[in-house]
Length: 140
Image (cartoon, rainbow, N blue to C red; front, side, top):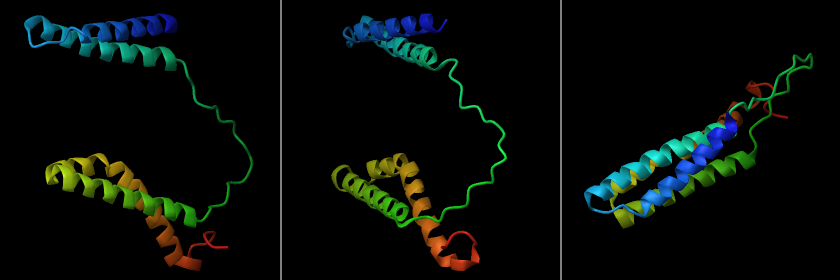
């Protein structure tokens, strides 16, 4: 079944590329555009199903080993987080200057996962430093 999905998906993607060459501002062109979009969507879905169906995650065996100690956030994580925040500010600023505030707002929404992850990295480091010896296991 997976091989059939792989072949059908690849065939639909080829059909989508073929129909994409006939897209124009005519009635036939609009039909070709719909065929392109639908064949591409279904083709990629079947291709992903064929590649990933039956893939299982790693099986966990019960172990009696003690839990790993909590590692304190490192300066490297803080540096990566600060760099991510700086890069996001640079990208959004560049959008604001070149394309206007509307596209800068759209860009900030698109960069929101990066901004959140970078802020979490910085915040964890700063909170661990601020808490100091109150949180056991975070300082050595």
